[in-house]
Length: 287
Image (cartoon, rainbow, N blue to C red):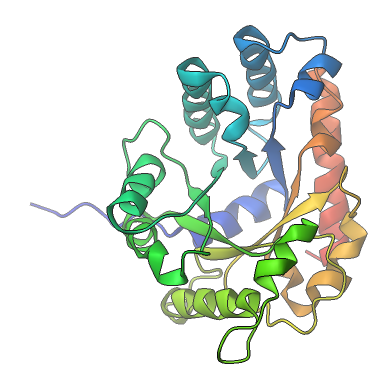
């Protein structure tokens, strides 16, 4: 009996998707204010209509989507059902889904979080998951192991754009490195084997804010993707990416949420906004 083929690693799939559809991640963040701007009620019907419109308009043309789990969780089990349907439909249309849940815990609890998002067949099975390493990088081991086995990826919080993040991420560890730098080094080690095997991109990425300015003091060359929130409403532009990310800019996955979603509910306007951002990023990074 022939053994099933190993799943293609997330990093390789991500590079192919961005090359084919453009280097852009669209966040699906159904804020109450955004629902209101679309003329929708802040209830399960509004959430469903909003999510369905985004999926129908963009699923077959955007490389990556990043649903923010919290905005679905606030509606309880019915909101999670909307998220489950959207995740499955996005992936069926050939897009990659990065679940923005920022999970982080230890032992069997971390393993349970990993099972929820990274085990094939799980209702919320996604291509990648955002995780928090600030219980110690080693606490992520169950998610790292399952992601590797399932062909999935992780995006680890390293240098986030919120001002409060610096209190932890730029604190100095015993070895003299900042904690953010230490997380980047861990990710480089995770990606080494995939890169040595010829993968164009490792599967273990960092979250690095596009609004942070010059990051030349950090080694961003982890071999994996750099998920970069902050484009659009938070003030960063695609043209800022080379100055922020330097030689690692080709591995950036710029994430835009309100910059695209504010053009809804008109499907054509959503598509035009996503295409414009992808074109601007492509021009800025030279690919």
